[in-house]
Amino acid sequence: MTPYKACSCRDPDTGRLLGNGCPEIKIWERNKDGTAKLDRAGNPRWRWNPNHGKWYARYEAPPKADGKRRRPRVGPCDTEREVREELTKVLGQETGTGYNTDRKMKFGAYLNRWHEWRVSEGELADSTLEAEREAIELYLKPGLGHVPLVDLRDHHFRDLYVAMRKINRRGENAKDSDLLRRLLEARASQEGRRISTRPLSESRIKRIHAVGTAALNMAVNHDHILPFNPAAGIFKSTGSKKKGRIKPLPWTEERVEHWLETGQIPGKVMVWTTHQCGTYLDFIEAAGERLYALYHVDAYYGPRRGEVVGLERPDLSIKRRRLHIRQAQVDDELDDPKSESSDRQLILDKETARVLQAWSKRQLEERLAWGDAYQDSGRVFTYEDGRALRPGYISERFNQHLTQYAAIRCRYYDEGWSVARIARRHRISEQAVRVAVEGGPLPPIRFHDLRHGAATMLRAAHVPIKAISDMLGHASTSFTDDVYTAVAEELAEQAASAIMAFVPRRNRRDDSSIVRTINGPSGGQNDLNQE
Image 1 (spheres, rainbow, N blue to C red):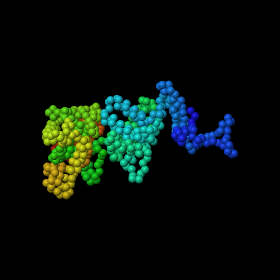
Image 2: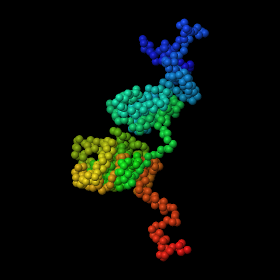
Image 3: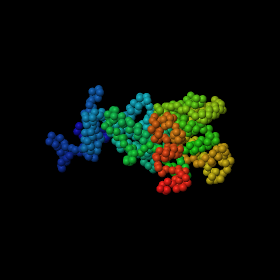
Image 4: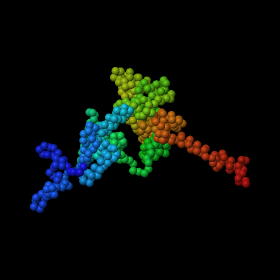
């Protein structure tokens, strides 16, 4: 277990590593006359060359399962002191804590083993496993797969994330590091498909980091290869204030006025009021939006985007007013819903059933018009030729609705266009133009925020929180109440009135009591003044 030095020089004839046999690894001591200095045993004296090679050490480890000897190597280290400290740690793990230190196991090989174990469980959604495999193959293995598992440190992951942030953000004259080049090569193509060229967002990097952290947690807690997780705590907030969940804010009149004046959106998640949501639905219905029924269902009942796209015809009964959500479409494939609670059945109102009946009739007419070219995907909501919708398409259409709505109001109020001229310009009905003109401004929200708005309006309609939680597919009512229900104006007004009625106040008066107090019961001075 004595530390030694070795290098990566190779024999010019055989190409084999010289290791500690390299002639430059040792410095031979000589006398003034040039002869070699000898020790007491008569052997030439030498010392390690401080400018060549790295420090290593070997130790006796428990034998393998077949009884073969194991002599793992510790290193490389820059100094003898460092290798001795590392050797002390390894020996303590082998003898004291029971950790099975396999120094030859690479991080990439362990990631493969960890993912195979995840697949064998058979309990995870295909989309989850695919996302983990992509994180491993495109980022974790190309970046750190060659590093021995026991040598991983937090700086390895920090360097990886620095390189990931530079993807598609590099300057023209920037020199790529080896780490960045490996990532770019891995992202060039995957199974013949070209990987997205967009820069990685911070949220995407954190999701990839979560995959690596989960694998290392298994190496610590289950396989006992590591005494600690080197990736833990990298993205931990340094602030003293604990950050809670982002809660939606309703677009009140005051917030809308501030947005119109400054262009600033007051929160990360905003929801429409009942009036704004109704105006939007009236507008797209009058404008002849083909997928009006989809947006109607989402605004009323708040299914997730993948869930509404993945609806299949057998799961909808218009006659019984039942809608069964039991799958979702992620990217190009159908998959199980987000959680067990997401598999749910919705009871539809009569108006929604009427809207879906009209949509079913239109879909049948499109099928007859397309004839043999119709591609029956079996979905409730499709393109005109029957193909399944792309999830991003409905978000794009939603944003186009808001852009068109704002353009109509701008042309009417700022440019002085007539209703008929605007209708011709946008190729919509005059009724849709009047809805936009009379309905007031529609502040910006995301398509997913219709889900938040549905929860808010259900609370304002005094629907029990348990029913709202079941409708949205949440596992607990506390999550629904904490995150998905912004305080609508109706609830705020009700709460204010309830507080006023609950707290007894002697001096609380309405207008009639004030008059009686001033004039007295008979129109004269009150009793206190008379006294």
